[in-house]
Length: 331
Image 1 (cartoon, rainbow, N blue to C red):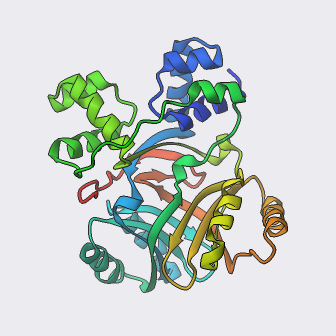
Image 2: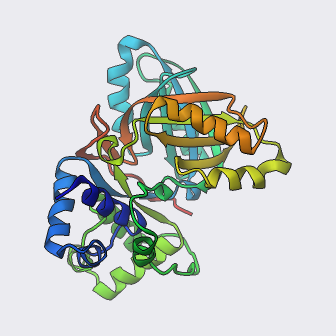
């Protein structure tokens, strides 16, 4: 089976992470068994996987920069990866050694985690934090972009209207925890595990996804997805230009995420590009469309150790070890 078919299968699951292999096979014109076997191979090799995680916009979410002595980095990174409220852990360039995404149920918990726990780790001698104020484009929106327009149309599920939101009850939290361990678990298996009617499981998942209490996304390692460099822009946008800038950024195929934040800069943009020269081309393209729009700093992600709960190896592949995220406290 070709690498193109594998990439197309991943692209389908980026559009609909719980798509059946029957539907995936129909769209790609392969058998459901072949689609299932290819997906299981990709998972086993750590090349692609589906993640279920809390919505950062429904928690108190912070981007935390950590300064750490070089000799203490390996131990500090391991401890940071083991904490369930720390969703992502990266080593990065610039004015920080480690870059974290932290999601907490409330401000007090976040404060204690950053100041007392992270600040108290051996070797850590400084932290700086920015709060997420609005998620413009989430990481689940990033695509490999190998499908035809017709295949994308076939794969795109009908968008369901938001349901009345009352937060997550104990049954929702149990279901979210089960999905975090295996986001593609069948409804029947979830119903048996949670001792809940299948119709109730189906209804609860649809509600949590529609209200964005949980986020489902399909991730791919650089080897399969074709990107070799991940970078983050930090910049400041005048309030009256926000709408124009967001529209421009949404048009960039390399865009992975975009958010408004507090602090020295008000906009944080994450891109994935195939090689370093593509970063310069991207900057030139955006500058041509919006003269004066340039990052105050471009952060290069050197190594990613954890991505929304899943631990990664040096090649950016999933290791198979999950630190379950914390869904409790989701608004």
